[in-house]
Length: 283
Image 1 (cartoon, rainbow, N blue to C red):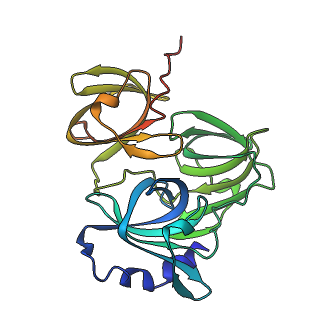
Image 2: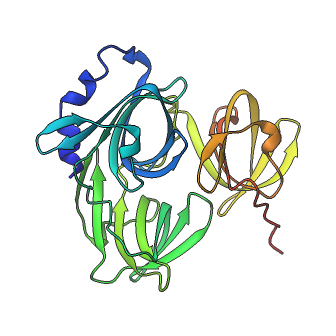
């Protein structure tokens, strides 16, 4: 259980010799390893990307103690906990949990994972707007395991606890779209980096570039125009890696996720999904 992972007191002490004023904590499922870059689907519904350096300390839960580990011990699908710098996303420490949490499913090969906003509930059918801007429809039979993330705990839940507007994570069969598990996130997805109460998120297709202003057409709602500045962090999400990008990587037709300030629509983070795949507008 993730609860056991969260309660262990040894993790912060591994950082005693580092400057933790700029430290951020994340716990969740390790979804991707690209070089020394880790992508974590956090318990709050965020996708967090961190970089492991020579000074990153690795450990693993073993029964009731922590033992040293190394980068090579990391595997996609593990539950991990990490402390990293909010300045450059460099990890101070990474802890590998002894066992997966409720939200990690030991799934067959034909299982697909989706995270996003629950847009509609019709009978036992859910429609989810994924973080990539796709509409995914899944069916929840009696065998579907429903759980809820409350803070850092994962507890059992019921189908009736699902509500439109929630952030959810689900594993489902790509052959028939039947869900094996649905997890209700404790809070909506928010961007990595600074704690910004003034932040908004949009996912959709890039339809226009005008100077440093870009227009994004979401799956639902009106188009949004945001402005990119020198501090805007752009990230390329490749098939097997995540790497830094630049404004010049943006192209009309790409699928984006962007985080911006609702006060002035200034963007502080943009993620380009599969940057080489440029989509044509729907007719």
